[in-house]
Length: 311
Length: 247
Image (tube, rainbow over all chains, first blue to last red; front, top):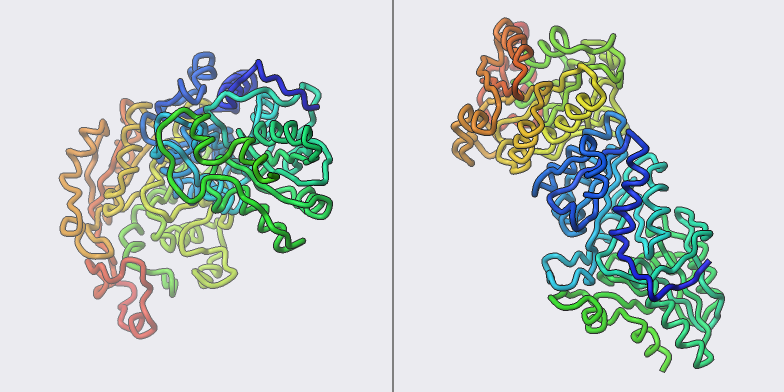
């Protein structure tokens, strides 16, 4: 169930670190690797409790991914973390050749995705990772939006036999779901059943879509929001249904409009139910330094950018 | 051995090394692929796949007849080794520079699981130009991986020419020593010397071990020896006719 708690904000990287410790401390097959960012990715919570199964690989992401592949060949389940730009970007070929192609059981958990990294600026703001990861065969791609969803994902991906990319954020965002919310890989969550438009969001933009939903309701415009937590395999059914039932399809993501959520939705619709898709996201440009909230405004991925589409 | 396509320069420099490993040194757990206690081998220089396939065939992991399908469509014998397609291949490889990291992971896992196996990793000398190799060397030493044996196939030739001309990697012994390895140097085509070196290296328990094997690219085929033209290429029918077998 959705019950937004604006007072209680938490970044998905924090939920990840806590859930990983809780799950991993009990399961001896879990090993965790980090590349000198364990304080920021929050893998240090696991590391402190389980020093023998925690490996700080130094500032060497390519070696880290290869080592994780080696662990996986021996039946261990490595959770590998760094910032999204250094994991999906720096170690792309290692992920491709030593993880995805041999279909090894490696969980790539990338924090600090998107422009909401903030002050670090363009070099650290990964806007292409969904695109890079979803194009790899054998890869499952998740992008989570709140605390409960992240905790579910951390536990669930252990059961998937094969590589997974889990996209996490630095920016603290409100809790969206209550404890009884059910999640399922490949099955998006629809919130509301308005027919004036559908806003498909993922990660930090889900809360923006929900805020827009509230604001538009006051203007008598009823939209539905879809939390696309699984980018691959994508929930085609829910997208096609939305295209049939609602007037507009809008996507919003903290990622380049090329190759990410918006593109994924367009791929589904152009093959199944051709319809115009309005893509909100980073418009084929690099980011810059600044407060995350201000960057979201400047680069056009807030609730206001959705609301404006109805003026 | 007359395995038709299974012959090219980068493979021939490895024949004796793989033979000694698979017939004398490695614990193959009764030739059970994926047995948790088996010794593992990562062929980081994946382009030497033909030599590995031929060895696995001779050792009974794969049918000898399958060797004729090498690199052909629908064959399990891909241009570079695929662990999901070929019994006895412990790791998929092909993109250079990645194998030592994987071997490290296997070696650390062995320690975590308290298993006795050894992990062998074969890299090419040109491959040492990949930065990831040196990241991995730090890891081998940092985690005191005395169950790891790195073998450098030092034929001094890469695709574009002699390794020291393309991008100098020397001095090799000093480099590996400064990264914390115990280094052995050996004639990679001398069976007795290889056996002796592997035995010595097994007894060394303080550090990871690197064996620099001096080899000859295209070894055993007169017109292929020491020629970078045969890096990954198989001889044509006319070329094959020029080979004097059994020399």
